[in-house]
Amino acid sequence: MTYKYRVTLTGKKGFYRVYKVNAANTLYTFHKQMRADMEFPADQLILFKELDEAGEVLGRVGLFDMGFGAADQVTLGKTVKDGVASFVYFYDVTNRKSVNITFEGEIDEPCASPEIIDSKGPDPIAFENGYVAFEDLPDEQRHLPGESDKKKKNPLEDLLGIDLDKIGDEDDEDLDDEDLDEEDEDEDEEEDDEEEKDDDTVEIYDGTEELTL
Image (cartoon, rainbow, N blue to C red; front, side, top):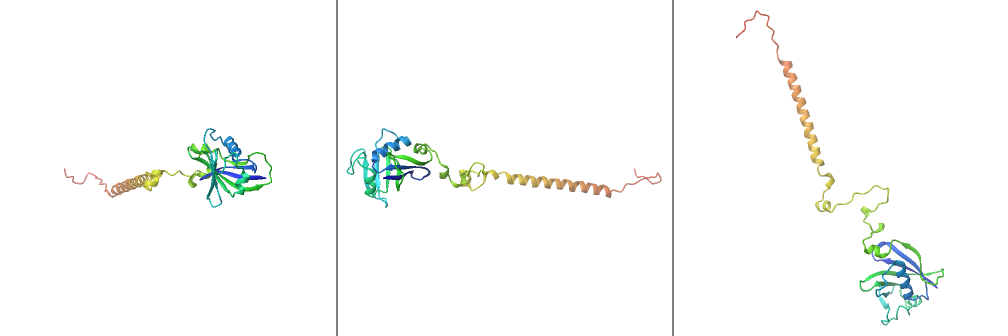
């Protein structure tokens, strides 16, 4: 019998691994395959926390028997029979690093050992080092190549409630208005000067007039 399990990271949409696993495989066999596939550290204690569909803890299985059997004794078939719907698999108990493993039912694909049949995203260590998947980006930063880039929000803009790119535009508009006003005033002055010139009477003397000296 072959089971299907999905490995995910809490809060990360950009990562998953889907495995097919033989029901006779032990949790230790599954652990070794995941460690090899996702480059988990080889020198750390591991632990499978078993959960039912309601999220209640059914047991804890590690390298040593803690009352629920050791990882190399407990098969996946037994966990399904016991009602285990998912695991929190701690691949590094000391540093509390883990992934979630969810049982997704039986499949008609034979396999001898755990095998990845679908995957998405880099290994978990990339997310630990700051990698952010496209699906996990904020809406304002989520766009595909070729699409118009959305303006990135500046924390200072959010704090002040202003658009820093528009600062100075109003001053420029004021300056433009002042320039226009000055041009209008110059034109008015020129018109006044022309009118004054037109109004001046030019007197012509023919020599018979008495000139006041």
